[in-house]
Structure formats: C-alpha cells, structure tokens
Amino acid sequence: MRLFAGMEGKARLAGLFILGGMAARAVGDAVVRAALVVPGSGRETARNIGDFPWVYRAGEAADLAMICAMLVATALLYALFAPVGRHLARVAALISITGIATLAASGVLAMAPLVLLDGAPHAGISMAESHSLVELALVLRDQVQGVARVFLGLYLLLIGLLAFRSGRMPRAVGIGLALGGLIQMIARTVALIVPDMAGAVVIQADIVSLLAEAVFALWLVIFAARPPSFPARSEADS
Image (cartoon, rainbow, N blue to C red; front, side):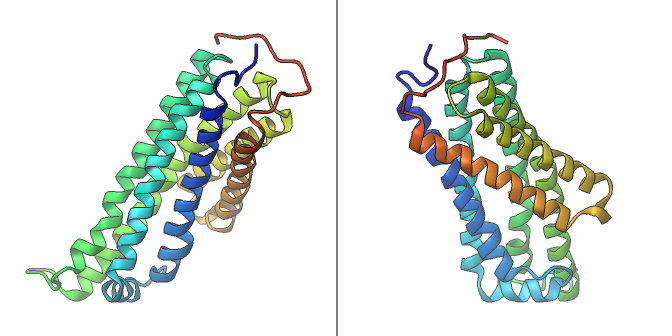
C-alpha cells in the first residue's frame, strides 16, 4: 500500500501547519518575550510590559496561533499514520492533545502580568508586590510549559517511530524525529526534577528537537507526494 495515496494534500498541510506552529513559537519566545522579559527582575519586566503592552499581547496571540496549528497538525498526522499503526497513532494523538492543553493552561499564567499591571497599584497590593507577582507568574508559566514539553517530546518520539515503520519516507527522518523527541523529553524531565541542571541543556535539547521536527515537516511539504524508491511496509494495526 502507499501510505500517502490520496492524502498528499493532507501530508503537505500537516507539514505546513507544523512549520507555521514553529514560526509562531519563534515569534512568541525568541522575539516578543526575549525583548520584554528580564529574567530575575520583575521590576524591569513589568516596566517593559507596561511600556509595550501591545507587543506582549502580540506574543500571546502568537502562542494562540501556535496552539491552533499544533491541534490541526495532530489531527492530520493521525489521519496519515493511522494505517501504519492505529493504536499507536491514537495514543500519540492523545499525548499531543494533553501537551497542547498544558501549553494552553500556561497561557493563563502568561496573561497574569497584564492583569496585575492594568491599573496598578491595586488595593492591598503595592507596586513592589505587583512586580514580584509578575515575575512569579512568568516563572510558573515556564514550569508549566516544561511539563507540556515532556508530553510533546513523547509525541515526537511516537510519531518518529510511526514514520520509521511506515517505510514511505527515509528512515533517517523517522529516527531523527524520534531521537529529537526522546532528547527533549529526557531533558525536560530532568529539568523538572533537578532545576539546577536546566538552562543550556534544555535549550540545546529543544534546538535538536526543533531541527528534527523541521526536517520532518519539510519532507512532508516537499516530498510526500513523490513516489518513493523503496518498498512499502504492510499495514499494521498496532
């Protein structure tokens, strides 16, 4: 059987939504929050957000776009890989939805600084306390996102295994995606248990997983509709 037979459009859409979600994440994290959030300084962060609230809101809008893109990509990848292993594809989709829901929950904490700074100081809360609460909310957001990335790393691992089993794309793509997800899952789990080991290790693990995911998405966009030069595997329902 041909894995993407009649589904080339879905494969390309899945790749495009994955890339779109990655771009939205880059806008939110690498552009907006990197410019406004000063780690360890609630006062400086609060001042930056207070001076440019529309920029901060744009970052939250980018996060919402990322979440929507990830949901659509999850549905499309389930449709693509269910013929390879329906049960495994279903488990992967449920894990992805759990991770995405956790990311959405972190968005509530990300909106807290805007609420705290709007009309501050509030009754019973001094400006210094508001600044501390802003910093605390963003730290908690990062912690919740760390939990979400554990689930999403496991999702990439399972999708990588399905891609490897499919026999309809280079096995290196599936292996790379699985390893990227595994590395992210381990790094994020260790960071939750031993926070002192976070930082550079987590950033490097995220970069590896992002590169692997980008390669996978680009393959879907560019090569999914082309007939492969190697034999397909038979359908499995496990």
